[in-house]
Image 1: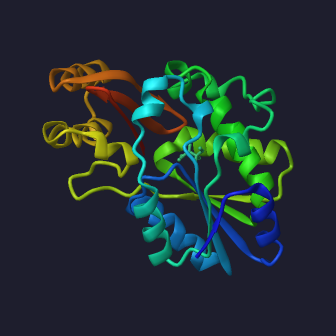
Image 2: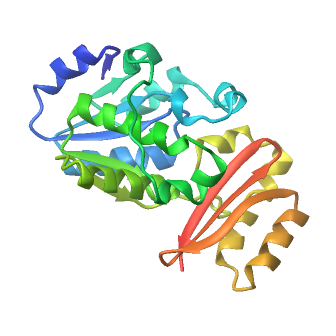
Length: 249
Ligand code: PAF
């Protein structure tokens, strides 16, 4: 597995590929990420993953600081999964413009997570645009757990006539229903026990205020529980750990 740190290295490596799948990540990898890699490998001759904890999508500096990082373990997992190359850039390499230029969407990015994390989706869309321009993959694999992100990226790719196909991949869950997420490893044992209630809440047929109240009783601080486009979305905090999930209804 090739380790690439500079944009120029990715561009040179990329020239050798006629069928390239891309899995963008922020590291702290879990089986959900590995399922994206597996799908990419089944549809492309080569797969490149990136690990970059993108500072511009964190509206809270403490959240950025506490975001889980384990590059060595991540690289070992990607190597074992058969990834051909990993892009591990520094922030200065990606933001040579110091974030003077950015991509912004004015409607869908303002609700749900966007309403609670100002600027979050500007950061996500900007970094994904940059990564897609660097890697120029045929296909890019993204999880449905971050459904709002996935839709915004799909829409951006269509809006800017980009040639990468954005491929949605289903959410992977732990046996107790908790959606796999890098942030799960920040949960204490007690919080981890309570966390599956979020998925249960998404599937309950009781009125939304009742479900919210029950979650709060179990110690969640609910940001939203809302329905849009035939899906139910939730974001809630357990202590400092922010969890999100969504299901089709
Ligand atoms: O979902 C993520 O891990 C990130 O938001 C992404 C798409 C890699 C952009 O930083």
